[in-house]
Length: 256
Length: 170
Image (tube, rainbow over all chains, first blue to last red; front, side, top):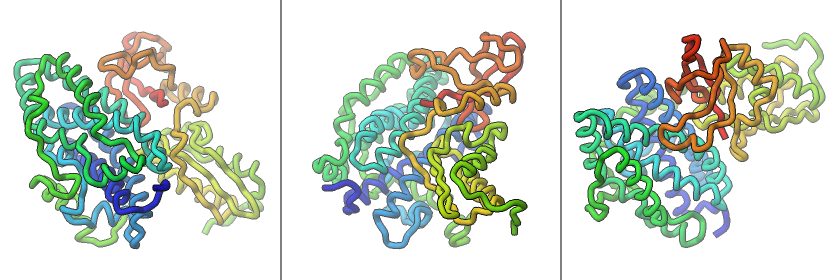
């Protein structure tokens, strides 16, 4: 396969990446004005903004690959639920601050490892996006790792809540490193790294931080929920899309 | 309709000089050249091509900057403007000019400094940032995420003043 050949696998893959960034960015945006303290409100929305910026690059690329006249905005705002390929983890509701931190920590750990591989991709657009995003992902991970430790090694209540959050979100972590059919196809063609190769290092970092936080992880071989990457979602995505797509559905083509 | 008071600019050299008058909308004391985001610029037969690289992926100032470049060039009589966005090599604060650093400091924002080894590890101190007011090195981080994506919020322990630090990004 040559670089940038718009095969269906590549189209799916770029949409999957774009959707994962957009949906997590949208979730973080829901915190705007509701953060536990001002600095963390700003942190959450800053991280969300980085993710939205990364999503913009990815949707613009997806639009050129799909080339059916739809723009980046059309792809972001005018698809149906089963046409989104984001990982299930990122659509999970914010819950309390602990749930948001746990979700971010699982994602950031994956994201940093993933981007370290993607910067070597033969796809120049993905490699360029990754080069930029990696710097951002590194300080996102620092933020979420610190909060896992603070909450875990904090008060009895913060410990209990962050442990509960880790336990509840655990079943959505396996999907990050389980390749969807389009990822397997692209990995076999030497186009991307197979995400399964990141599993061990992901676990290593997660364990290290969680141990420092005096917390424990559910068993590694626990049952894992899957399906987001191929469009089968938890019930939460539909509600998120209803809110996110409201403006474009009500006032088609509107711009700020 | 903007009517140029002077004849339109015609050379690449003039183009660069005009770009030096476009300021960053978030940190107006810096020009876009000080910031290091203009990677290439050319003016040929009345057609300008300006290549810029975004600072942070989600920085809302980037689209404002592209618009400001167009408006500024229009006021200089250049109507045919192409703005190319280039992601790689990714922007770094190492590209900020020496003048830019001095301007930031005079404006009350601590310019980027070399990060301490291992700064990416949880709770590791970022860097030794000097207070832009009293120059003390006895400062502490309040939040890595400040008023814009590119800045962190610090406080000077010596003089008590909170201040923005333009984060080292590389």
